[in-house]
Image 1 (tube, helix red, strand yellow):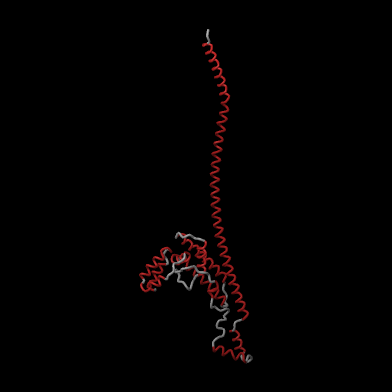
Image 2 (cartoon, rainbow, N blue to C red):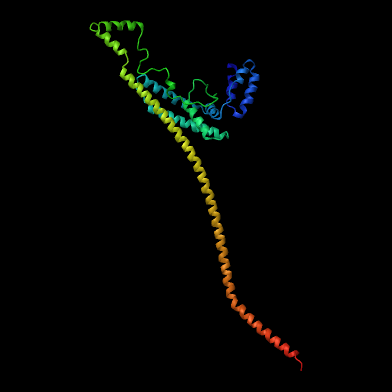
Length: 305
């Protein structure tokens, strides 16, 4: 597939929805290599996002790879019996992972992909697991899982590797055991080549303890991440409830102010009406008197003589 590597690279830079159609079209153009092209897997959303970090933000990617390599070298040094600040290297790696996570989630948001809790965790696990010896950078298909100390497989502790020495060295050491008094220097040299059993045991205990600490720290980090996500969701819901309550309170306050204004107006009109009652009653009395006088006058005029 060497002749179409660039086309495959472009394939993994496409949006996930366009992958299958473009892969099949590329397979048709590839001729004999079409079967290999069709076998290329469509990336999951987290894997696609990490791929885009590689393609679009190489500085961020290189910083993560450098931090991972630095952490690996620190562990290798400790397992080889040399001094190294694993804690400092781990802190630098954690910071690089966090920075890469923010950059990758930003890519997802800008691509209009929803950042769910599962997607975020998949991205985080993959970033922690990098670099991968199995998958070419920028062509991830699925999420990766951090391997912990598996990346140190094959290393020996405290210089134990090759402690048996060469055939010539073993031959030179043999007389020292047969005649210790005659060859004290050879005996001392042979002893120096053998690893200190206590140091090896202590180093192995340190490795096992470190492995447990890494697993526990990763589990604690995942718990904290999920708890943070859960609390963030609750915070958003609570903020929405507060906003709704605030709007309802403002509307109720406006209704109260309108009702109070109406009450004040009605009270004023009632007081004005009550003040007019005596005048109205006096007017009624005067009108009644005039009506009575008019009736009497009419009666007198119409009375027979």
